[in-house]
Image 1: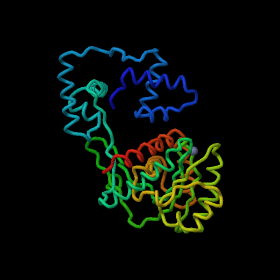
Image 2: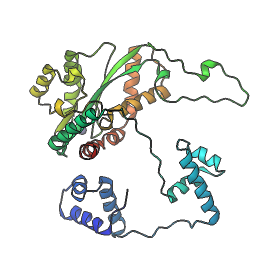
Image 3: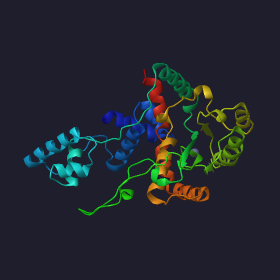
Image 4: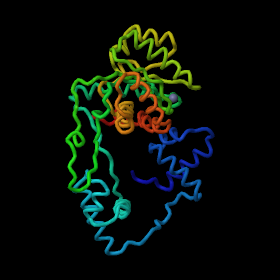
Length: 338
Ligand SMILES: [Zn+2]
C-alpha cells in the first residue's frame, strides 16, 4: 500500500479532531483510503504531532549485507513456499537476517487465497448481487453483520484438513501408522451450525448427526441461537445467512420477519463466494484446533464438549479480525470485478 501524503494526513486529522464522533471508517470513505491508513495517520499524529515522514532510522547496510540481501530476495522469489527458516538455511544466515532483509526490500509474504472457478455468467450475477447488497444494506456502518453456516466435521480429528508432522532421530525407523494418515472415507461425522458476528461475538453451536430441515433450522438455530445473539447487541444487526435452501424457505422468512430479524435477501446473497464469507475460515481454524489439541471423539457427546472448549479459544478479536474485511471485500468486488 502506498503511503499518504502529508496533505492527506492533515485532512484526516483535521476531520477527526473537528467532527466529533466521526468514525475512522467514515473518514476512510470520504478520503477514499483504507481504514488502517486513517488509523495510522491519526496514531502517527498523536505520537509526534507531525504530518511529515520521519527520516528512516536503523542500521546502515554494508556491502556484505547488500550481497546477502539480494541472495535472500532471489531465494524468496524463486521458492515462494519456502519458510523463512528454510531460506535462512539455504542462504547460510539467520532467521532474523532474512526477516530484516525482507523488511529492507519491502517484501511481504501473503497466503494465496483459494477461490472457486466461476463461469462468466456466474461472476456477472455475483457482481449484480453484491452491488445491490452493498448499496442497500452494507452502507449502514452502525449495523453488525452476522453470518451463519454449516459444516461437517469428522469425529476422527486426525483426518481433518491441514499438515501433520512427526519427528524421528536420524536412522530411527517408525511404523507406518506413525508416519501416515489413514483417511476413512465414511468415518462418522457430525454437522455443526454456528454464527459469528462482525463485533467478534458468536452464537453457541448447534451440533447434530441428522440433517438440517426448515423446522430444525428455525427452532434450533434461529430461535435458540440467532435471536439471543441479536439481543446481546445494543445496536441493530444484519443477519447474512448462508444460501442453503432451508435458510430461505418461506416459513423461515416469515419467522424472521415476525421476530424482527433484519436479514440479507436472497436476491442480494451471492452464491459460492467464500471471499465474503469469513465464517468458512472460522471452520478451518476450529478444525485445526481440534486436530492439534484434542484426541479424537468416540461419541458425539465428546465432540460437542470438544467443540465448545475449542470455540472458547477462538477469541473475540480473532473473530472480529475474520469479519473485518467483509464490507471492504463486497465493495471491491461490486465495483471492480469485470
Ligand atoms: Zn455484533
